[in-house]
Image (tube, rainbow, N blue to C red; front, top):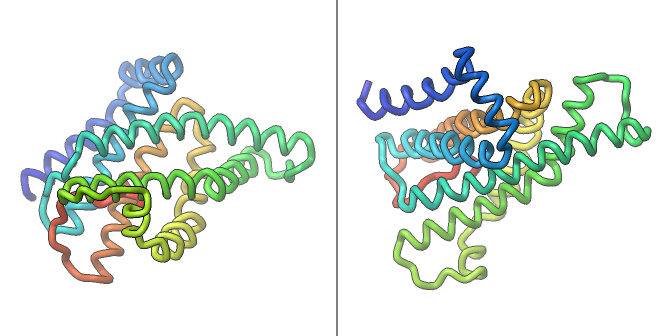
Length: 228
């Protein structure tokens, strides 16, 4: 095992251990409840960045620090804030729709979790993923020294066909909806961190899929998105 693998594994294990130790779990719940947006920012800035590093490690075959790592972590943190809000909006909105007879009520907590996950991933999910793809591409172009980074330049560089065919039509129904259904069965204070851990898992899954299609890749100058 390489030292980088060990360090990454320790970082992930340490993050998970915070939830398993009673004292730290109590502090975690108190912080998450008292400062939901800050907590969401930190969870995604840390865990989703670990997911990007894992994806790059698998794709390149070695550990490579991505360009503009701090900016990428900042963007993940901001997305974490939006996810924190979306979780509450879609949970309460779905519950209200079920109470008004707009969605079936008979399935109980599992039905609420499934419909919340499906509605969120089919509406909010594509917007979030597209935004992250755009910002990631902009940072890639900046790291490459390109001076022309207009909206048209960035959008023209993105493989929108691949984004729609794989990210939207495959990962949403096959990964995100089932995974977030499980997340919405958890107590509310653990949902955002569980979603952040999912970004680590998906980073590995997508990197393995990309590598199996194209073979070992050369290390790029910028990170591979965990949702790209």
